[in-house]
Length: 441
Image 1 (cartoon, rainbow, N blue to C red):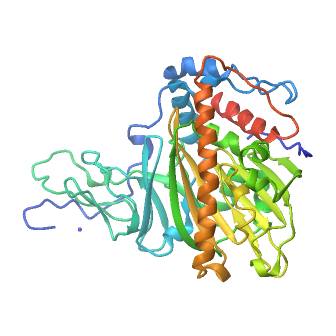
Image 2: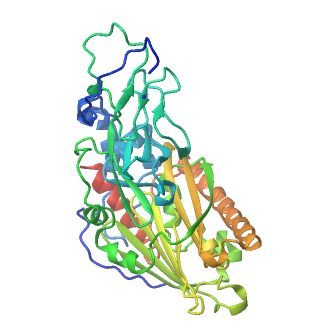
């Protein structure tokens, strides 16, 4: 297997008798005026010691992997939330969830509950999904709402975050409605994706320069991914979620081993891949793996076999993978994963795009979210869709077994450090170096 290393720097609404607030609203109070979800650095002293047990400067051929404590220690997990997930742009959804005004979806990242919506004017907005009265969650799931009404005491907020109604507050003193709007978050879109930035240091009401966001998120890989068909042309099919008993990084590592585990763990897939053709390119925040298929696409197979696969891991927990199909169908394929599940799709999923996120739930638990999309010529082919989803489920279950086994091994006293296979695991090494960089900031 060959490896290419590109040397790019890694710097990286009121019934009578209910008090109505003033209608002279101003924007919601800035996020910096409320309690932060960040933790004081003094809590991270012990975790920082663990960070320094990995040396990112040692060459790959001589390097040790991060210690097992990176995957098991609760203090390290808390540090990761603060330094990795509460800073920078994170993929949280897709633009098809916000096609029309009043569309919304919710999510959680660490202890941050958020809601993303499209307001009456078609502007995409994001807020902490928490009522300013007594902290109830406002919304759940996804759908359409003309406003957010707290299910606890009925406080009501507009889709622009403004507090519209505060029930039964007669007699309250020193209350300014403008101080109790929803707390905004920075939101942007790029291609088919919705991104959030939870950094409390950034002005959440600023206009977002989406070109700048793309460069911050993808670095110099923006054009590479754009040219390879990252767009909103595909049709949404379904979502599946898997709660897995492993640290989120175990799942990422599984993706980033350059196909190393495929011949051993996914024997049914290996025959359809030319694993010796694997190439890896390293960019600032992205690593791209590519591989050729083991056979040529057939006309009577709907172009299900791709001739070449591209797997782009976007730090810290998101994948964009594209498969090039036969010219007969002129299909450009995307698959977005956080594990080598995408390789499982290779012989059946040519016209598919699936977006996958690994969300940390604790030191030894993560949630993997799969959203499936399909090229237009195939969206009414129910038999094809069902078979493809079955194939996806099979490979995913195989990887769950692998990852949960690795987590148990990491918790064993017999293991502390490992080594890298230099010819295939350089993308994994790049991932660990990026983590170290963020964790020491």
